[in-house]
Image (tube, rainbow, N blue to C red; front, side, top):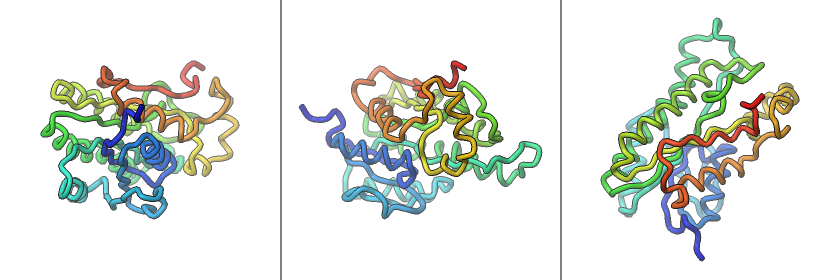
Length: 243
């Protein structure tokens, strides 16, 4: 029996990062045809995976990417919005508007721009799937002791946007869903090693998620086994929200 994602074209933003790279790798193993989108690091993509430079904060950049993807191939392109950034532990009272806007520019404005551009094409072709990566910190709890009001609020917005798009587009064949991970073992989290013991103590399972586990949830939501999922949010936080 072949993979349920066999032959599916899927664009993945933030493809050079820890979670994005794992998603691309999983999709490739499932027989899909992933396309990596990122601003840097595209040379790190798995062999055979095409990469396109994409500025998620620019509608013009994303429009050019979408045009390039459909130039020689009219098959639908599903989307995974994996890219995200976080402020460097900045107290809310000290955060500049520029710092706040930078995080929101990638984490929510970028998700809207890409979802809109890819969603238009999926709607025109009768359907498809979009999976957005949010966070437990925009859903079930406020992470502590790090201070990240911009990140938390941007990820809450991703969850709300995903539900809104699911309602608008679901009846026309485009499923929009969300994966909200807790702490994941990525290079970004390695920068805050001094907080790791606290984070693990606050997690029922006592460990971080692996990028591959997040990729598995994404692959599920993209596939036909999740065909009745619309506006769902998979909270995979290792039990952090139960504490």
